[in-house]
Image 1 (tube, rainbow, N blue to C red):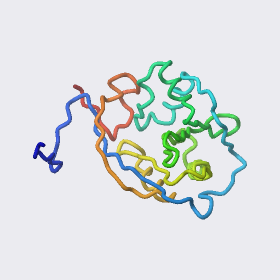
Image 2 (image 1 turned 180 degrees about the horizontal axis):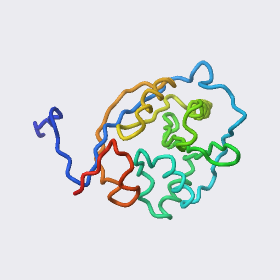
Image 3 (image 1 turned 135 degrees about the vertical axis):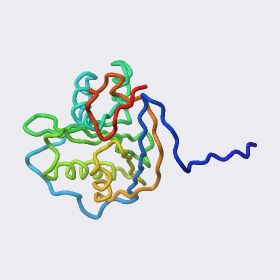
Image 4 (image 1 turned 30 degrees about the vertical axis):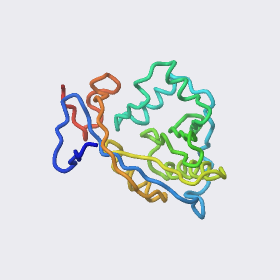
Length: 204
């Protein structure tokens, strides 16, 4: 057995053309005593039973473009459709005046530990408590299942600077960190080059 120990102290150079994020994992170990947000009559949540890949990508980009979300933009139509329609995966649309203003995805692949896989609002819907209302819906649905023992999610340093504080204010507690390295999605053409200026493009 090797005695080699990976030394994580200091700096690790990332090649050009790549992006690196610090990922924070957060968990909720019990259902809240009361809803995270009051009911609203200006928005409703609708189950998206069979997401169309093209429509999904368009909304995914609108929600995540400023943060260079790329996780679902690397799949072709067939792969993305298969993934989104997995029986243990549930997608929802928050609708205002009949128009989607965000995205919510819950993954029950491990029934005792469901994950908020994707969560976000389009830029024009941010503010006014809509995000907290949407998270309240997610938390309520996940904990309504008797098998749920832990609800978790993750965010990273490419996300909104408010994201980590927001999740913690909703009752999630950080429990783990990781480093993610990936091809820069802007150099792959998934997002315009000028998006996410807080993560500068460094060409390969």
